Amino acid sequence: MAAPGSKSVLFVCLGNICRSPIAEAVFQKLVTDNGVADKWRIDSAATSTYEIGNPPDDRGLACMKRHGVSMRHVARQITKDDFMKFDHILCMDENNLRDLNKKASSVNKCKAKIELLGSYDPEKQLIIQDPYYGSAKDFETVYEQCVRCCKAFLEQHS
Ligand code: 6LJ
Image (cartoon, rainbow, N blue to C red; front, side, top):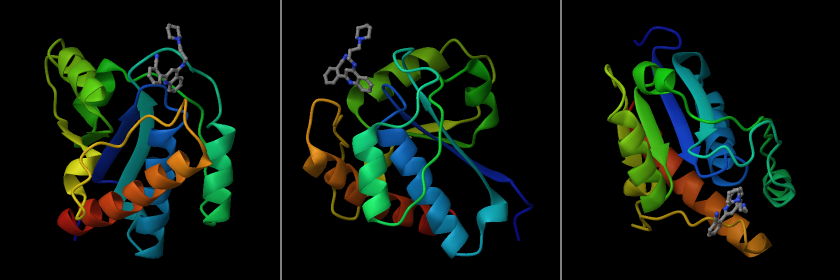
């Protein structure tokens, strides 16, 4: 049995107000519902500085409310420490992956395995698109992708 808080995952997107807080909240609910919340440290962060200090996007909050998933987060930018302290960094698109790999290369002791969250999708939708300039439907798609991927990620890591 894993020690409390011994597994860790950081979800990352461009601004940390749309996709990554949704993924974080979905995964938090999943581990709670599965009785393994104490095993996991879960957080989310941005590659950019765009939205530091801001709450999640209203359209994402509305989407999560519809699905009965609570979401509370304050946007922050990823730090060098994150690369050393998290086991997994899961991001949303190719730009995130490029930005993260570039940042990771300047970190001496990078522990994190950096991957696309979509690489866990049983329906093989590899990219979780930025819904910032999109509609409520786009947030719904992000949510559904996060649910499928987070379930598969948890199964693979429990
Ligand atoms: C520097 C220039 C950009 C976006 C976002 C996009 C744009 C966002 C955003 C996701 C989360 C000063 C800041 C881009 C939060 C904010 C507007 C521009 C921000 C971009 C390109 C394609 C699709 C979406 N950039 N904020 N400013 N995504």
